[in-house]
Structures are given as structure tokens and as C-alpha cells.
View 1 (tube, rainbow, N blue to C red):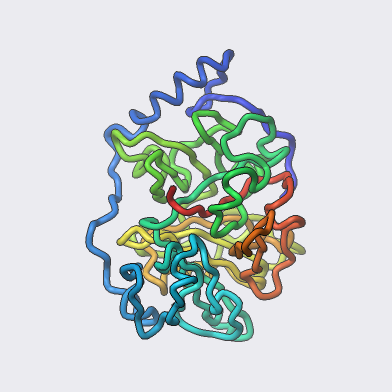
View 2: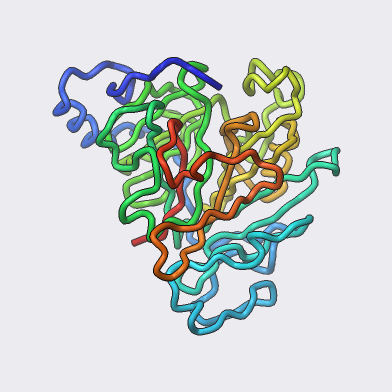
Length: 351
């Protein structure tokens, strides 16, 4: 959705800052923002995989294989990032390895029929945060400005470690929530809004800002907000059928079935990105809940704004090669490898 140009600098809680130094001070105090909040921490043991998943969704030890994971040659295992055949697989299927990092499966892919409409599909990517980390990019004009740690394209050293890229959330003019990265605010964060929180240790969580996230004592690197939680405590929001436009965004041509995307988290800490070209809000929520997600938020909607890629890394190539993930997606010009005016997420190997 289009919106007015965003303010470049602010304070984490919406109070404008006058000097860059003040913003840096605010960055140093982020660890206190979650004081007193209840945090859904990542448990150390991995949970049992959903019935549609392989026997385990955790990454195998280097050099090992599972029944659902193709055997990899020593040369493939030695590479930092390897996109596996399932990333381009068509049809419906349960979890299959999509990307390996240092020989271990870091991203799994699945495609399931849309809820009560088998003519449409939902593509889901399961992301193992032990092997990769989420990054929030500032768009060229949304939020705009220069000097962000992650700017309007995948560039520099990130080109060598990028695994995946996908769309952000609603534009600022919609009033659905804020954007902050590196102690700097693109637009004001709002209490209670559904938030993806990226901590400085590289892990991420999803919850309600200043209610369940951020965790007390954990410094925050970035926050992206959008609307209310789509799933909370494993329960789908009761408004998914009767409050489409007001609660979940303005769909193209006033049609409730449209391109939609979302991001969720499982009890074990895996992130799950879901998207489809023709989805109702209910279909998006049911697909995420069906894969064991306990908290989730809707990201962007409508064809021009929903897209996801994994990236191949051919030897001696200057740029990664993007592999589209969602059948029928319009796609983003440049596939996040050239300047893009809107914010977006990437998934990078842990360095």
C-alpha cells in the first residue's frame, strides 16, 4: 500500500530526537525496554515435528543424512550455502530440505492447499535460527535515509552469506506499526502491536510490543511491527473471517482472497514464513497454525508486495542468483539485489 514519505529519525517510543547522539544513547538503553515483560523464550530441546514434517526439523550433524534429506557430496557439504532441489519443487508436499548451510539443513520448504480452497496453495519456509539469522532492511524511501546497517539492497559482505529474502509489512501511512533498526527509528513503535523483534545476539521472536516482547535484559537490534497478532498462544485471531479490511488490510479490488504473507514462530524457536498468491486471512492463519506456529503476524498483502526468494551462490559469480519461492508471485524488481524503495527481510548465515 502506498503512503507518505516517512520520518527518518525518531525515538523508540515515538518521542522525536534532536541529535544523532541522542539516538545512539537510546540504542544503548534498548535492553531495558522489555523490563517486566513476559517473554516467550526459546526452549533448548527441539519440539516434535508436526505430522506433515520429517522425523526431525532440526539440522543434522555435519556429514549425516536423514531419510528425507538428499545425500550430499563432500563438495556440496563444504560449501557455505547450497540451495537444494526442493526449493524449486512444484505441487503439494510436506517439509523438505530447501537450503543447507555448511552441510546442515537451515531452511525447509512445504506447500499445502489453502484452507477450504484446494485450487490455491500456501508456500511455507521453516527457518532454523541456530544456523541463520534474520535481518531487517530499510527501503530507499520507506523509511528512507542513509546510514542504516541494512540498507535498500543486499550488498557488500551480505551478498556472500544471504540465504533468503522476503517482503516486509504495511507501509507507514497505514498506521499499522513502526520500524526501528540499529537504535534508529524509521517510524514510531506502538505498544501492543504485533512485532518481529531481532535481538543483537542474532535470534528473533514475535509478540506484542512492550507486552510480551522484548525480553528483559536482551538488547534489541531491530523491530518491525504490523497490526495485531494473527496467532497468539496457538489460537487464531477471531477476526479473520468477519473483519477483513479494517483488521487485516485493504485488499486489491476489495477482494478478500488476495496475495498475502505472514511470519510465525514455533515453540522451539523456528521461524516460519508463509505466502500465497490467492489467500484469505483465514487461509494464511490456518497454514501457519497447521505447522505448529504459536505466535504469528501478517506481513504485506497484494500481488506487488508479496515475494520471497532463496539465493544460489555460483562459484566466482559477482551476485547471488534468486530462486522465486511462491508460485505465481509478481516478484520484486531486482529481487532485493538492486535498490528497493520498501523495507524487507533477509535471512543470513551466522558468521
